[in-house]
Amino acid sequence: MNELENVGVAELKVSNNSVVMASFGMGSCVAVAMFDPLKKVGGLAHVMLPESRGKDKGRNPAKFADTAVEFLVDELVRKGARQKGIRCKIVGGSQMFEMPGSSGQDGDSEGKPKPKHIGARNVEAVKQALGGLGIPLVGEDTGGNYGRTVRFNTSTGELEISSIYHGRTVI
Amino acid sequence: MTGEKKGLPLTDLQIDALREAGNIGAGNAGIALSQMVKKKVDLSVPRATILPLASVPELVGGPETPVAGIYLKILGDCSGSILMLLERESAWSLAGLMVKGDLAGEDETLVKRSALRETGSILSGAYLNALGQLTNLFFKPSVPVFAMDMAGAIMDHVLVNLAASEDFVMVIETDFQVSGVKIRGHLVLFPDIGTLAIILERLGVPIE
Image (cartoon, rainbow over all chains, first blue to last red; front, side):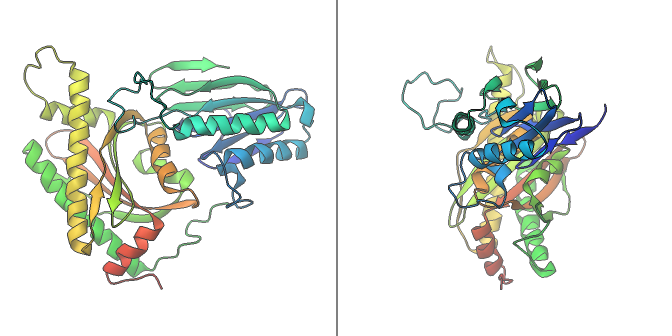
């Protein structure tokens, strides 16, 4: 294993060296991986909650979907990426525990509109922020009820996902 | 970015009081477990620590460790969460002690998962009962939920429910071990910051 940079909960890292960044054991959190394939600059944010609601602004932007997306783009541009050249892939946003009262399994057979779980809201918030900045989403592995680990190559944009129950995939 | 104790400096005396509270809670849980499996249960000295969010999964051997997690929200006079974690092999061993004999066609995994969820619920209840008596507060545990997956992924769920505006969490953690069989687990109490202040006050060491 060459250089592996760990990006923990509510952390964000960028690099213009070819490194592999990893977030281990993600549940409802979302890994937001952005890269400029031409300039070989990339970064990873480990987002925990959908929105900052202005409360925590500036303190830890990596924690919230809305602020993390913006902050990651800024950091990449500072490292030499072209904003128009940035691509994004997202992973995570699962629901680890069945909601009490949803009758055991995580199926929604009842057809009643359940409140969205935090993972789904995280994914939605990231997509909304990406849309606002015009960053194309070129890969996604989200939802489900299982944990994931991601390894992200910042220069190629290759993203490897591994989990206990579903093996490995690359997007 | 996240300083180890930034924002919530506790004195050694307060940390000791929380550790003792954890000891009493886990002690009661240990008795309950011991009665259930009819074996001796050993408990570690609890740790009471303030951790940055990113390092919480390290408590249980790293974020990718496969574990069974039984999670309950704490309601009543206080808010927070309590989580029982068992490494995967330990979880199945424990379930094996609970579920014996012919299941007559029932799905074995399902029954074992259910047994583990119930065990987590009983131990958490015993823990909170003792803590409630100690502090004269009412801790009401929610319905337990169960998952078996990476420790980090399970922690995500706990952290999200706690830490809307904090970058660190208070953790009171005890390891337990059932002697004679290879069962090792963790009981982790995550009091909300507001709750922590109430508990400390009741323990006679209020935050100034």
